[in-house]
Image 1: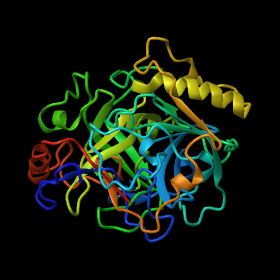
Image 2 (image 1 turned 135 degrees about the vertical axis):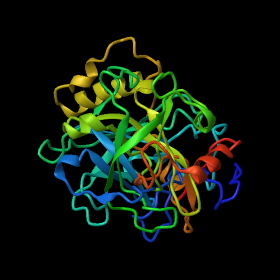
Image 3 (image 1 turned 30 degrees about the vertical axis):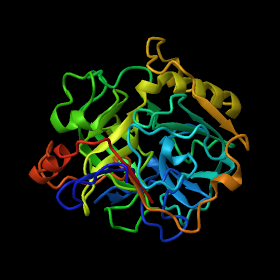
Image 4 (image 1 turned 120 degrees about the horizontal axis):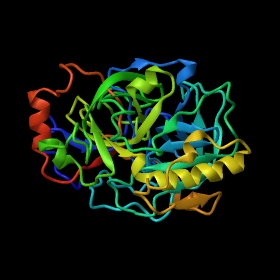
Length: 373
């Protein structure tokens, strides 16, 4: 491990949401991460099919959000080749290449193991910046459009800032295919947890980052929620609660990593969509042309949202890492990522982790780390 755990029982470790695999459907070794919504309820609602599962022939499981008929938002660590490392800090960098899209598949079905229909990935887009924290976000363009009667895409927050309190509230809903606790082996099932508090948003007076929360972030391209996400939920979306209840969900970010104790997933760190608006807009325009459908309304975002001026690195077909280079090893290394795991329910009152959790988070004086499945 590159960062100190500071005690697995007394202090939480920042991990990259990964789950111990029981089969090829139970882990997310590509970025060495996986997770599930802790204490979340099984979700089979067709209206929530914008929350998708991402499977890899290399033996991985991640989560994502359908934001257009053929475009999925996820975490970058879900689409990078495995490097055998069990941990990563904010000082680390992503590889220059992603895995081949031909090895990635997406489903809208609530069970990955029983999925009858998988959609082949065609292209992967990631930020040009390679630093881990703040850039743990990616877009997967699919070969085929997912029909409207199968799933209605969510809206990525790229047309305004997530700090706009006239549009975004203080709670989110989390959906993911991850495990339900650090030691569970139950990934691959979509679960949901609603009304999770937002606790830290850089530049937001209402949710100003203070104390332990401020020390957890190395980038203003991220935000923190009142945790409860685990391995396998990596890449899953944070959906504004009010818009989710209106069935017009805004997705604020993709789950990156989060702290955890030996038996509990805690806070969740998401990479912000508004911080990568230009990359998402460029990928959205290209996907609409490729899919032959009318551009979604969110593509009409104002020009002043250009926190990420680069359109990102695109990887098509076999132009990325070779298949041989991305084959998962016979033994899958267990990895964890802080905040990209699964969403778990609150066991204390709203807005608090409890004294032990806060003490543990405060004790984290080194960069965040992730754990692989």
